[in-house]
Length: 199
Figure 1: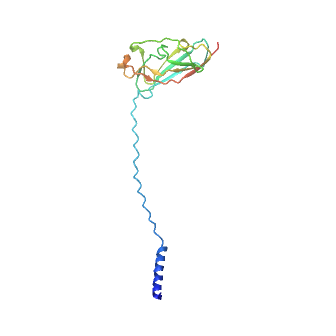
Figure 2: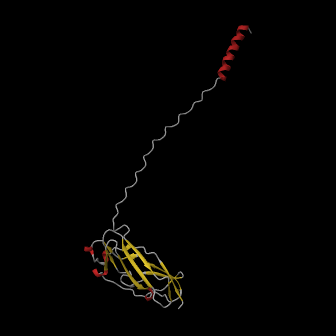
Figure 3: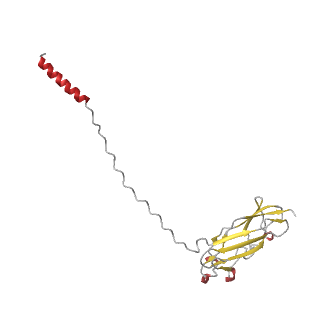
């Protein structure tokens, strides 16, 4: 091998080895562009309150903390109109007309007691069967639960109103309504308790 040829081979090897040792440029894939932010959904517009469908009627019942067996068990029932307009309430199946049906759930130490009172069948109500409550006004009545429920045995009694008004009318011109037109409305009365002790 001649010296010139050897130099040429050495130069070629040197060039090849230099290329092999050169730093490689790493290719970086471009990141995808972030998706455009979606606008937050608009909050729903508050619905306009119908004053008669908002907090319409407050109901409160109360009884003495304790009574002796055989004595009356007085219960006070009160409705208050919390709207800005008069409401006409049908008194049926509430203490506003007395005890004319099983309008309360009464239990003694967790066991339901018997209802002993009247069960009244009805025709269409008259205007006198309604009571008118002005805005902010209250109406109340008192009944003796012992006249309609078996409450002679000592124990802890829990009394809860069954929670419905048979008809509430907003327009005086619609009073009275026929049975087919009655529009019941729920009303929440917190339950109360009393202790009946031995005589």
